[in-house]
Image 1 (cartoon, rainbow, N blue to C red):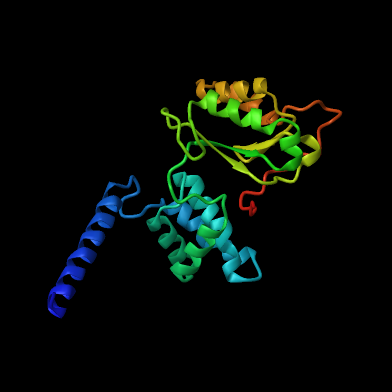
Image 2: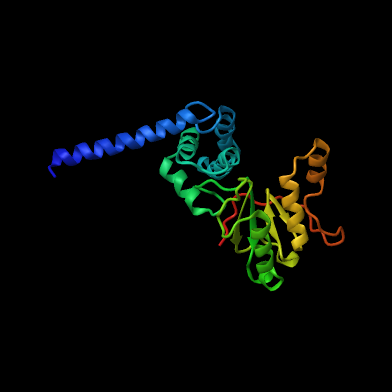
Length: 224
């Protein structure tokens, strides 16, 4: 193929990619943006909270993922623009940390610890029950209703309460199959405002004498 032919082919390919990206943006409920303006405004305010400008990238990506459920290429580009950072740097951070997702996941994702302490206390049985309860066969698969997915992780820093997991930014301790069934049922059933308030007050179901100090799960902790 001639140099001109090669150039024309590449130009056509790039044009097709651009057209596909433009089409995706046009379908976005936020118009031409993947992220709504109020999220972008919140991201722009983040650097003032940190001594180094680029330190804001992880909480910014977290905000984007909370809004969309995963980090699309368009969303990462918008985060980079909002923070005035190189898009390659933002993508590098997103691909390094396993709690950032580049493909759609379930609205509620189970992060089940299968490291040594949890493994010795039955985490493999918990994983099997999670798979059965949400109706999937393997990690990363999304349930048919789009609500659930799961993955096995290394350590979430609460070994004394094994087996444990992270779900919806909260830790759940001393897991049993009954616990998993209850958590899945709660998230499948339509909830009244009173029930939602009750759940938010009692998210970690452990006996009061065993309960550790309440702590919010670190959203961007490196696992592995």
